[in-house]
Image (cartoon, rainbow, N blue to C red):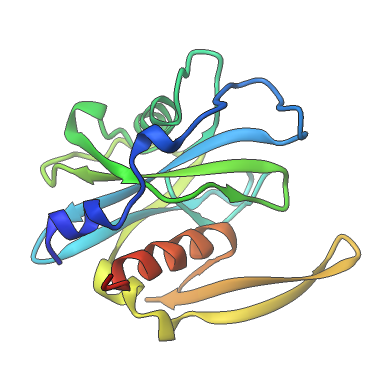
Length: 191
């Protein structure tokens, strides 16, 4: 997978508007995550497993990221700040490639997935309060859309559907799997 193909499959960062840390008129809160791509023998996606004691999404696999803070002037700021806070990767080691369209969560967040190339020489400095583990999954595995399963859960009085993909014992599901599935769709599109 060529770097240029990845960039061309994404939306430019200029497509993001209405960014603020304040609650929006539609009741959603803005958040951003980094989809960190690391080039080793092939491309890998860096993911985190949240600690079990967190109030929101305990024990789940996620991207580094979180809700917008007052100091963030863009979703890039949020994604880079949260990445450094959670796993210690300095923003100087990340080159922004583009964005995937916003994802609306069932917990009322408007999440902007920012795709970035991470210099492979980074050293992790994990915030052990928030992050239990950091691991990498080959992008080639995540691009294979037949590896995803469509699941259903009854939550807050209704059936909700979500994507799930398993890798080396890690259950990647919900918003993270949905964003990965959309990213795979873009990368697999030959147009």
